[in-house]
Image (tube, rainbow, N blue to C red; front, side, top):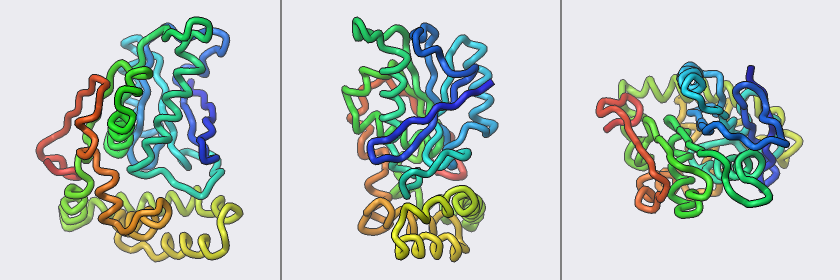
Amino acid sequence: MQERELVKLPDGGTCGLEWDGGLPKEDRLLTKPVLVICPGLGGGSQNLYSLALLWKARKAGFQVVTILFRGAEGLPITVPKLSYSGSWEDAQTCIEFIDKKYIRDPGYLKRRTRVYAYGVSLGANILGLYLGKAGEKAKKYLDGALLYATPWSTKTGSQFFYENFYGLYQKAIGLNLNSTIKKNSSSEFKPLMSEEDYEWISNALNTNRTGLDHIDREIYVRMFGYKDVYDYYDKVSLCNVVSTIKVPTFGFGAMDDQLCGS
């Protein structure tokens, strides 16, 4: 059984926490080690790689919780923003929420158990940015982290991703994401945006013929205030902050990774 709770973000947005085995009891701090999963593109928990890890972690005695990023799996859209490679502050809010509500003894302000985080693909980029941006502060909340199949440099890796296998990977993945946004989020944006902004995002979604590159260029750049797509790729590149990660972190991937390259 999985049970969900909502987390209100500082800008009014909404993320979710999907707890394996149901919500922890609020009057009883967790004592089992906790594994926080940051999923990949789409930001949901019902994918095979997340479920496979959940089953293994559960068997090993972990309390597992998955962060559901904005708009994932039916989460309410409360501000006109999507999750993307730079959503590290959303991850930070969720991790600190877990710590305050379920981990830290309010009387002694001591943590009652260990907490680890695992990020895969886009989720690894988001988690890695949080670890690097937060630096020493992240050590208050996490005992260790693992980054799997992360695009270490979005700036250089994007070119490989868009051109590899004639661009079919990024096209298939991007058009699927585009369809998901149109189906689950775009109508909820309407009452939250000006008429001009809603016309912009609707047009961007309806004219996407190429995939993820279109979403990066036509949606994320404007939505999050970047100068252009190259500025966006540079600002969300994990390699820029690896040296400031203080939480013990293990990162790994394949040399022949078809999406991120080596």
